[in-house]
Structures are given as C-alpha cells and as structure tokens.
Amino acid sequence: MKRSYDVVVVGAGPAGSMSALHAAKGGASVLLLEKDRDIGWPVRCAEGVGIESMKGVVDIRPEWITNRIDRFRIIAPNGIAGEPDIDKVDPDIGGRGYILNRRLFDYDLAMMAVEAGADLRTKAYVHGLLKSNGSIEGVNVRVQHREYQIKAKIIIGADGVESRVGKWAGIDTTTNFEFMASAAQMTLAKIDIEPDLCEFYVGSRYAPGGYFWIFPKGPHEANVGCAVDPKRSKTKKAIDFVWDFVEDKFPDAAIMSTVAGGIPAEPTLETIVKENVLLVGDAAHQANPFNGGGIASGMKAGIIAGKVAAEAIKTGSLKALNSYPKQWNKLLGRKHRMLFRLASTIYSLSDETYNKVGDILADLPPEKLTLRHLIQAVLLHKPSLLKDLFIFGRF
Image 1: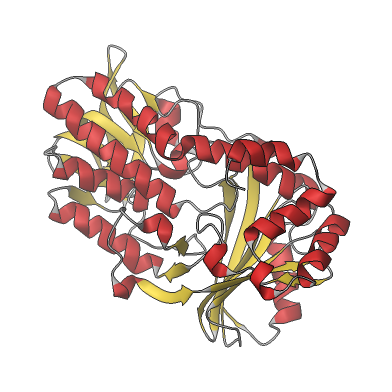
Image 2 (image 1 turned 120 degrees about the horizontal axis):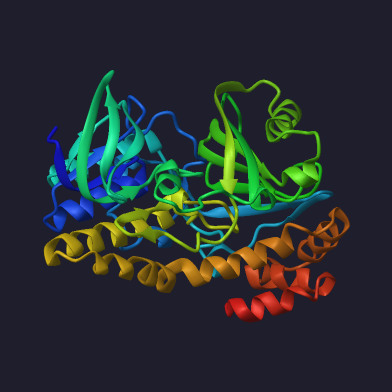
C-alpha cells in the first residue's frame, strides 16, 4: 500500500467498488478501503435487483444469480390483491428480476476494481480525514492494528447511511428520523414457496408505513423481511414483525441468518460533493425511496463518480467533480424525488383502503392486473395521489 493516491474510496460495497473500478479505468491511482474483514460479508440486503435496472451497469454473470423472479404478488390485509401482469409492470418498481448472491457479487465487483489497477485493503478502519490548512488531503486509517496516513487528491465516501466521511467533510448526512425506515430480515431455509414469485404484504399487521417481502432464493429458501415506519409501528420493532410472520407462515423454517438496520427512505442529499469529497450509494441517500433498493442506483452513482474523479485527475482541476451531481440528477435524482412523493402517499394508506384496492384488483381479469390498474384502484380512494402521478409522468 502506497502512502499517496489520486483517489481513495472508503467502502467496498457495490457503489464503492464501481467508483474504484471506473476511476482506475480512467487512469487514476486508486485505493479501495473496506472496514470488514471480508468483501460482501455480512450481507445486509434482500439481494433483489431488477433486470432492466442493471442494463448498462455491469454484465451479470450466471454465478451471481441464485434465482430469477418472473412474477410478483401483492397481499392486502384481508388477503391476496392480485398478481399484476409482469410484462406490463415498470421493472424499476417491480418486475422481472434476479436474486443475487451478494457475497460473491460484491467480491467480484471489488476484484474487477483490483484488476483495473486499484489497490484494496480489508479490515481497514478509516477514523478521520487528513487535513492541512483547512484542506482535505487524505485519510487516517487503521489497517490490521497499524496506523497510516494516506494522502489523496480525491476521496469518495461509500461508507453507508450516516456517512462519517461526509460528516468529516462538513456534509450533513443525517437522515431525518421521519424518513428513516426500520428494517429487519431473516434468511429462511426448509420452507416451501413458489421460486419465481416475489410476494409483498401491506398493512398494519405486516409492516405499518412500509411493506413486507418474500424474496425466493430457490424452492426452499428465501429472504423474508420488512421495512416499517417507526412512528406508525410504535413500540413494535421491525424484527418483531418478522418473528410474528415467520412463526405464522413458516413455523418449521430453519433461520440461517438475521439482520436489521435502517434504510434512508428519502431523496438524495442536497450536497453530494464538497471540495474534493464525493458521496455515493447509501452515503448519499441514493437508494430508491419507493422500495428501498440501493444496489443498482448505488452502482450507477459509483460509475459517474469514478469517471468524474478520473477526469478531474486527468485535467488537474477539481471543477470536473461538479458534474457528478448534475449527471446523477439527470439520471435518477429527479425520478427519486418523484418516487419519494409517491411512496409517501401509498404507504400512508389505511388497512381499509388497502383492502378496498385489493378487492378491486381481485375482481379484475388477469389481463388487467397491471401496475396501471393498481394505481387506478388506489386513486379511487386517494385522489390526492393524482398530483404525484402527474408529476411522476409514468401513468
């Protein structure tokens, strides 16, 4: 490990690895730092991605895929609402997708960055920024109990929700508690499910202010979890909703793993570049605020950030970094703001409204079970949603 690099990336998740990969491909010297001892572990993710959302991001390797999803079902509080026609559903909201093996997926993305020329260190704990005369000149990092000061012209923070890199640089990365979803998930085995079907449950019984999911990894294994609004779930934690669901639906399941954490369900931070520091992925609050998915969006942000960092090094001017938020806003930023408004409306519906919508969908013939008809059913009981959909411009 050298003591000076053009770019230091903090965090080797998908967003960080893509940043390192594209900065290295652009000719910059890059150091990628990961605080955990293993890339891709532990897995804190439902591991689902839309097929369409990954196009142009990375070529999906067969070994990364544990399962393919071709159907999804929405379950209202009083029963099944319907199985929307997968061919007519926007894949960014719900459509054909893959369930990934995140441990292998993340590992290979980091390896791609290394093969492009980046240096990589795991169990590398970044505990501050290196500053001189008010300027950020690198990072302070502890690697295997040894302290290092690594100089860098550009630092990319891919260090997750409540990014410390961002805070040290003077960016407010705090998530408003009002928009922080509480999430929990178990990976279950020894269960019987339809392997090509994702199920989403709504309502106060399952996930107040959010939704409950079953993401199949095969005919007898699935990621089962929920994201809830802490204000609406009151004293009951997300993990309690998962326990209740598993005990009811899968009483004989083997629990292979359990994870819990927060998901920033809000638009991207207003500031994602400050001087020579860029934020990507969850650190920049770039997860989809409608479904909480952050793999594809974080990778897309990483590609942009890596490329603009390389360009800034090549030109010798940090002004090139200012194109990162502009490119992000054009690609997904505006859409995420619209999805945030959409989610704020839909996830605030009452159980009664969910049931009425479910009853409408249950009476529709299969060819009309589309996302468009789902939204129309919601509009009958929530006309105020029309404004958001008009802004969204998709329905």
